[in-house]
Image (tube, rainbow, N blue to C red):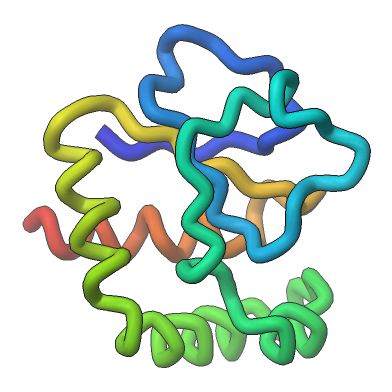
Length: 116
């Protein structure tokens, strides 16, 4: 099972394995409070893509396409993530305030489509 959650939200036992999928560590958050068990920063959008997107909802479709293209070169990390999701509940953590337009949503969609 793959879930997503903002890293600033309180950790809970239902989170299972907590995986941060941001390239940068979340501002003002200690490692203890974040309770991140695995940080897959290589799965995060490139710095260039992240800056271009800037969480502009009007760029969401283009962002998804560009991000999926970047992920084509990261099959090993995606396989690891998929395997972890088969073994236990996995919560993909992201730092963005925007809960409707972030990389964790794209990753969850990719993993869901591969599970079919």
